[in-house]
Structures are given as C-alpha cells and as structure tokens.
Image 1 (cartoon, rainbow, N blue to C red):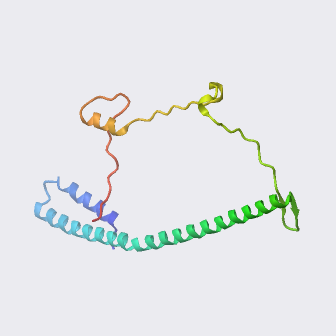
Image 2 (image 1 turned 90 degrees about the vertical axis):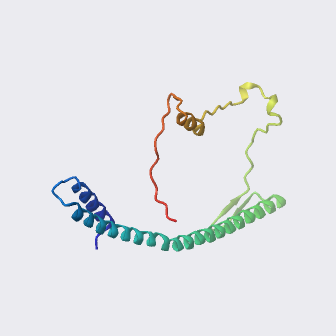
Image 3 (image 1 turned 180 degrees about the vertical axis):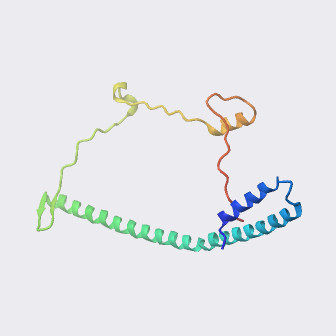
Length: 164
C-alpha cells in the first residue's frame, strides 16, 4: 500500500510533468485525478486514526487526573501527620526522639526579617525591578497598517491542519 508521503512525491512529480508539451493533457489529467483520489482517501484514513485515538487521550487524561488527586491526598496526609507530630513535640517539650530507623528532631526555626511597613524602609534595603516587554499585538497592528517599526517585522507562522 502506498504511503501518504509517497503519494505526495508522485503527485508533485506528475504535476511537474504537466510542463512537458509532448504529454497529452488528457493522459496527464487522468493520472492526476487518480492520484488525487488515492491521496484524499489516504488523508481521510489518517484523520480516522487521529479521531479514534482521541478516546485514548481522554482515558489517559482521566487517569492522570485520578493519579494527581491521589498524590494530593497522600501529600496532604503527610503534611497533617507532620503538623500533628510537630504540635505534640512542642506541647510536651520533646526536642529529640531516637529510634532504630529514624531520628526525629524538633529544630529551632530560622531567624527571619519581618517588614512591618515597606514604605518606611531606607532605599538601601530595597530592590527595584523594571521589566520591559514588547506589545506584540500593537506592533503587529502597526506593521499591518503600513507603519515601520524598527526592530520588528511580520512573518507568517507555521501552517496547521484543521479537522472539522
């Protein structure tokens, strides 16, 4: 069975032969019509495969969501158990528990600076960030309207296949 790629190549070769004046136009047209029919049939089969694999994608998405939910449940349980252990160690004044597999330590928290009012801070204790980003919508509109925008130009993006 001929592949879609082979049909494409053959179709382009026959279309190039159309420039040869010695080939009768009827013969050329018959060949082109037959090849286009095979090409179209093959393309429709490819679309069948694409649409039929959609259910697999849906099933995989559902399984991913189920596993993500399960992961979240387990992670939340771990956090709650750790908080439970932390609370009870602090309540009893226990700072260290040793066992054959684990050593549990209630570590002191790190010192952190708390900013009560950012506006009162001297400038030496602040960082200023400036972010500049191009407004691509505005640039495209200006270029389409015929304006010259230094440092920018219009390009056509990659073509896409739409299946309806």
